[in-house]
Image 1 (cartoon, rainbow, N blue to C red):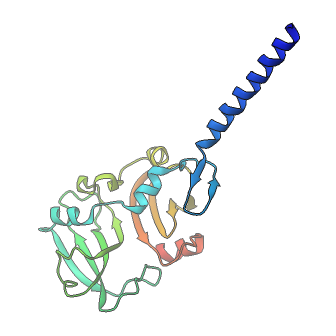
Image 2: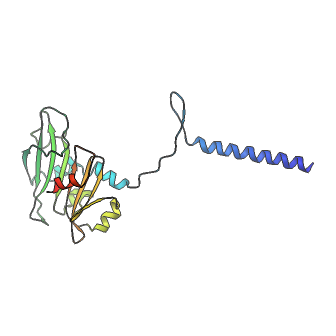
Amino acid sequence: MKIRILTILFLVFISCKNVTEKETKKVEIIIDSTELKIEKVKKPSENVKLTSFLENPIDLQEFKEKKSRNVTTSVTNGMEYHLHPNVSDSIFYNYYYHNENLNSNRIDRITVFKYGQNKHRYDDKTETLIEFEVFNNDSDLGKANLVGLSKTELESEFGTDYLTFNNGIVYSYKNRVLIIELNDLKVKSYNYIKLNTEKIDKDLIGEIIK
C-alpha cells in the first residue's frame, strides 16, 4: 500500500514539474501568422547609453534655436567619408557657433545635409545632422556637452570598448563615430560624424583627423 501511495506521489510530482517547465518555456514562445517559433530571450545591450548617444546626440532644431543669434553659415561639399544621402537638389551646410565663453580659440561647427526648397534657410527642419565638432564647454549641448569631462567619466558613461590613437579615443556604432581628443586625460575636443561606411578602423580615423 505504501509503495502504491509513494508511486502515485512520485507521478504527481513529475507531472507538476513538467507543467512548470512547460509554463516557463511558454514565455519564450512567439506566435506569428504561420507557425510557433521558439526564440531565446535577447540580453539587453551592454552599452545602451553609448548607442543611444550615437544615434541621437543632440536635438538639432532645439540647439539651433538657442544659438540663432550667434551663428554664421557657409556652403560646403562635405567630406568623402561623410554620409551622402542619395537625394537630388541637395547641399551640405556648415553652421559655426560663436561661444561667448570660449575654452579654445576654435569655433564649434555643425555640418548638415540639406535638400529641397528650404535648403538655404537656417530654420530648415528637414535637414540631416552629419557632423559636429566641439572645442568648447557649452551647456546648450545637453548630454553632448563633453568638453572638460575626464576619461574616467567617459568610460563610466560609454564604456571601455573603444579604439585609441595618439592622444585620444574613438567610440563607434554602425556608421556613427565619436572621436575624442584628450589632454591630461580630459576631453579637449571631439567630433561626432555620420559616415558612409560601417567599417571603422584606424586608417579611416587617421584620414578624418589628419
